Length: 286
Image (spheres, rainbow, N blue to C red):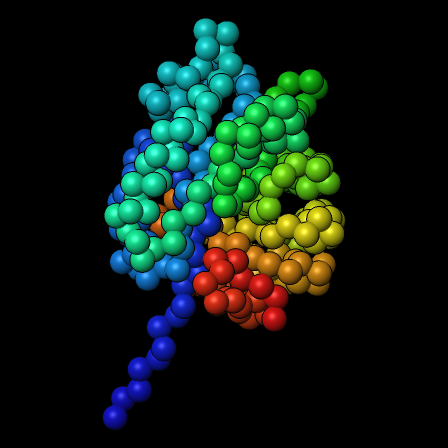
């Protein structure tokens, strides 16, 4: 008689964007909940964007931006994301919780460079209590100007872009900002130039380990973001640094992307010694 392998237990998706995020044109909270329920996820967290950093955009690049983004660039060539509609978001979340009573639906926010904007952050957290707060870096500061990380490729060597990014992530982690999960530690890899030498995580081991040690000391969790596969070495370094918890995030901007790559990511985390703990959507060190 053939034996059937036990289906893998998927972790909760703690990093999902819906129509309440400025860059999620295809986002849909209700459809994402339906997707999570159909997959048997224990939880889904809608971590909408909070991005107060104004960044200049190369004028030559503006005509090639998606219409949604292009419309947010000022006549002076500066992009500024619209504010999160906290009240509307919270109301929609309540509706989804009522419609999907068996799914644990968590509130959340993804903070962009919150260590630069402490007063704005304080005002945000006064307006709502979030179940999942992610800290992230999308921009860095060079010569007194804010710059999107991906826009630095072609202007700086790829390796220097990654090191500048990780240095800013370290400043975020060492700050007193109230976030619990570090999002996408490997964010620059998403736009690694195709013409460059292949990305090798080992080339940045010292920088990654420095960030991970500081993150472990802070008591926060590391996100395994599945937009691109996080190298297993980073998860191993996290454990060696004393990291206690892992959060899984698809960074989905549309329902079909919820829990993408989670089977492989969960297997990698288990191999590194992390596992689920009851209904908790964070995996802890065993």
